[in-house]
Length: 319
Image (cartoon, rainbow, N blue to C red):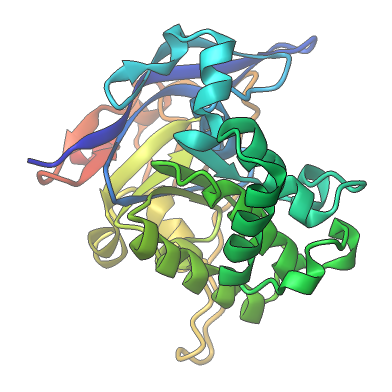
């Protein structure tokens, strides 16, 4: 029987701003099996990162989780106090943040970042923490002589390796990777994805990979969830989603990927822009941009339709 590591139920995370309430995550239901990888994709601003921050209770002010449940190993994280959540971060769930330069402390040597995790969470001596740090960073391609360098002395790819080391140091059960290859060139991006793939096997990790790039997610994900304007629009095994995308938005994302083997064909685009989440469209939130829309799409929220055991789509076209 497959073990469910993480189960998110009807989660709503809103930002209470002066102009209005931003519904960044608006009723998401998902689950992740132990040892599997879930890809979370969608355009910038669709709520992907907010969902990741919600799992770790890291939603910044004025954001607030207003409804739902986040069950990790059967226990609801939303019922735990902050002391319990701080213990859980790093040891059970960790995160690879999008921008290493704004996450790493610029006045701390890179080795100190990792050593602090071992001395704080594992109560190791400084000498033991230094030994573990050298071993971990070396396994990720960072030589020992660079442990006393500062973050600004590293390239983008090397800084991302440091972030991965911080995420893996305490051997958590779940790692959330938030756009881990953003701003990296394609060669370094390929190296980082290959590294994550190898580490997933080595440490038997469960992984949530957040990205706006479906081609990146294809490298790692077992299942892909497509988000639009704070809601899910499609959920399917990765291979099936690429072979048989159902939702018009998913098809639009896939058609926008350049294909070098097809000559004289420009990538397709999705017309319009993502909606304002303070005042999202009624009915299906994608309907103003959808070329397959029907009149009912403007008034009726799309139902969840199971087209197979593992393939779900939120669209009136399949109801």
